[in-house]
Amino acid sequence: MTVSKAIAIAGLLAALGAGPARADDMLGSYTARISDRDHRASDGYPLSSAAQMVRQDRANYHKFHRRDGDDQGDPWFRTDGSRADLQRMLERGGAMSSSTRRAIVNGEPLIEVDVYPDSVRVSILED
Image 1 (cartoon, rainbow, N blue to C red):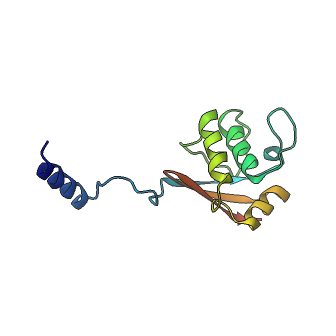
Image 2: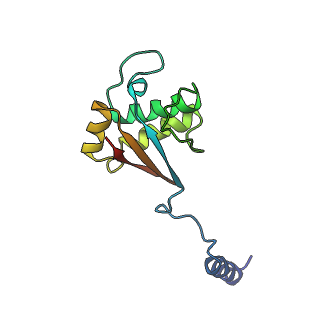
């Protein structure tokens, strides 16, 4: 394909709103209750970080079918590998505020998780 054809196709796609996904394009979101069962790993030991607890919530939802009444499904974190990626994204700066981390570690808040192509953001909906 010639460069001019590539530019014309890119222009057409942009005009139709079908351009490439940008890092700030939200894929979607879900809500989840981080309950006492999410504060413990599958084999029973206590978890120490908010990132681990949010990951465990998704394992409880998808793998073990231990769901809280407020938990919503998601299409992104169904596998062990995708949940490991979730934890890594949560451990990066900016994914959660320090007050959100504290609320998760010390309580059972209702959270909202906004999912982006290369990141996630967690906020508290209800303490």
